[in-house]
Image 1 (tube, rainbow, N blue to C red):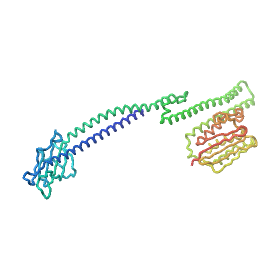
Image 2: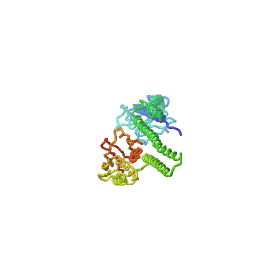
Image 3: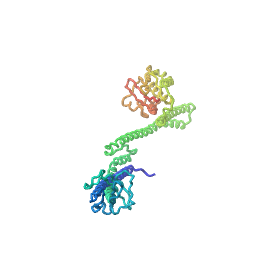
Image 4: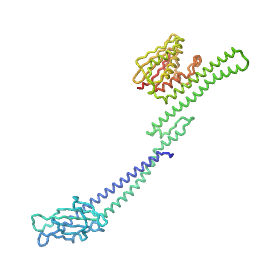
Length: 472
């Protein structure tokens, strides 16, 4: 498939616009030239009519009879083509006419216009028809009704047409020269104007898994139209780099987490094979192997949940899910964790502040609350309470989970949602955690368009805040 070129399209568009402009200029100049010459020609025709009308005189015997003195007729307007004229009195009597007057010369007598153009002997003639022209000879007899004349005068317009063509050719040649100059300037301008885009594309082509820096040229960052694109590409590359780095860290951490239980399981089985053992010894070692397999299974399930949560961010349609009351969902999770909370003498206190319902999968919400509540219970001192507050503001619902545990250091607080991050590794081993719980919670909350944040103070407890949009 042929590739499209923005440069070529812009150049073609500019050239087409210049060509259209050139044709319009040539047409307008030709029209104005023709109109000006025609107006001048009509004025000359009018003057000729008055000139031949002035040659009509009374007879020398002082009678009302009129005659035409053809000896004083001026030369034709077009020296290559003779003029035609005819002079008639008020009664339609022909007083004078040109020697070459053709009886077949047709004039549209019904047309009320003064000037018009007619074909004659393969030429174009301009005709003027004037009525009621007074006789200018003042030496004639006095009459009750002064006689008037009707004059039809026609002259060839071939010279006008030649001048119009000459003007059109000159205008066209000049316009073509200007078109060539403007086209060259436009092509240079378009190529120079698009050079920052080409430089930006070249810089983008150098981005790889080993080089995530766009390194856009200064001309691209200084071009107003490219600044949003450059900023968007910087943001996109930063996000991709973070995702790529997180993925590599996830794989490394997952391999590290899987390595230990697999090595322990392998060594246990090897010890069993080294020498004969009693049934009790076999049972004890096999039970230890089953514990290691349970840890492997728990880790695998956590990794699958995290992958499913991250995948649901792009595939889940929230409005198609059922409407879930957050207070009921939190109460159900607290009820399921009651054996754990009772064993540690910690109470989960649910405090709803008005109704708050969202479209969500109940199992997803249960996974979120279970992780948050279990963490709060495990790190809360005996006899304390985990406070769960549910509220609604505008178009968002908020769930706050607050404990009175040892808190989290500020240096660790910003990393608690990262995969396999554990602020206290020894405590995580005691509780069986892998550092995936909060990462799963964050991915699940973001899948519903929500956010999660943490506030903590060492020695005073931790507060987890989940904000979810209410989709109606």
